[in-house]
Length: 530
Image (cartoon, rainbow, N blue to C red; front, side, top):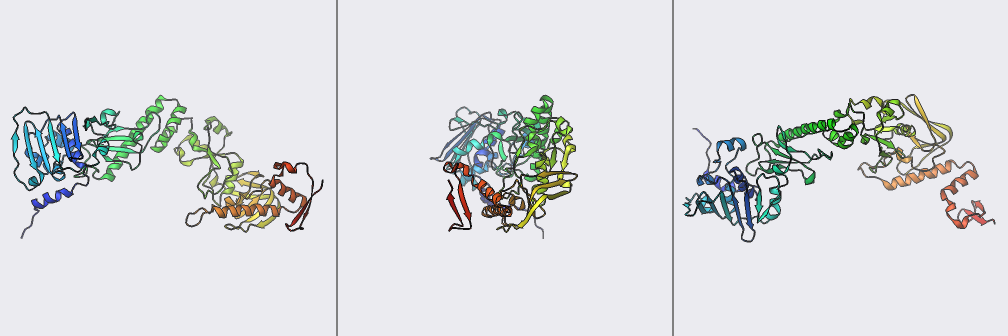
């Protein structure tokens, strides 16, 4: 017994109607056929009420009508077949999408019922008496394309042949003749941002005039456009809306884009002053992986340097308002002379707050580790604080206590100042608390509860920011600081009154009071002394 592959022709014809996933493939296939026939203009007319679609072109026309109804045989000449790999099933969409089809070309006409055609009923091709018309006209009846008017502009955005829809020319902003295309190994490429540096990774990829790769969200005016070489790429049969081996082809496309950006950036580097080149193209240099082009340039991008402008804390709420990018990048001479200090630190956590406070006190600029190439000259002048040991000790210790907070329970040490050492260097901090090894060191100049934010990011196991717990523990620490400092009655009262800012109340100006604490219904009694 022997078996062999056979084709059930009836089943193949019946099931082919389910091969197409997009109703608008009907239009794209007709446009594609007109382009391959050498058309220089195409007219599409659609009447949604009568469900009629007519496509006219000025191409070479159809020399053999039988090729329209022969499945999987393209009928195109050898040159077209070699360049575009046509499948030979495009016109079949007309048979499944319409009830009646009328074709006119080269002085011939075929008018047939599509159901009868699919039943393989012979169709007459009539010789027309009038002079042969230019190109081809295909008229379809009973087509369901209710949204064509809103879709056809997007469908034809990159089509290389002018298209007129219902009497109005379509703009086709991504057509090759409307763009400056650079030749690449994969096709003609238009890069966004080559003049102003506002690059984009969003790329619209076209094959034979139709989009086969489209970003989900993008700004059409800020997107790259690539017209693939049809000899190297093939689209999925039958809709041609996706590339075959898309994951592998994406890598080829990305490689081509990156290489073209390299060429553009090298040209810009030669043509522009160094500071202008860096300011304009740094985002593109970083975004496309060409930071090594900056290695031999003195000018630096400001974006890689941050200054500590506030109190460093663990940012559970997501913002880092204690940092800001410098307005102007430091000069190479200042860095090499040491007048500008650069350092690198990991994100603040419970183990490295001391290093952050050291950087703050010494006015170091924070260097973004991935912001420049690893062989850039600035790397030799960056101090890597995470690689150096850190020590924190109180100077003039006054008293110790424990904060019984809602979320945290650290020990608290009140002192005159806090000495923070990193490596062989040290600084004395007098204006802010420092957390280290489970202890909060609070110098005389600190009276707020803000240091609790160095102990924890106040985020639970579900990544929920506990704002109410932060507020409660911040208030508890401020209260604890006041109580621990209450060793002298006058100093204690003076500290409490400073927080009340009594000078803002004119009625109290110049008045004298007699205060008794521990008496009265409110725990104190006040009398006007004057």
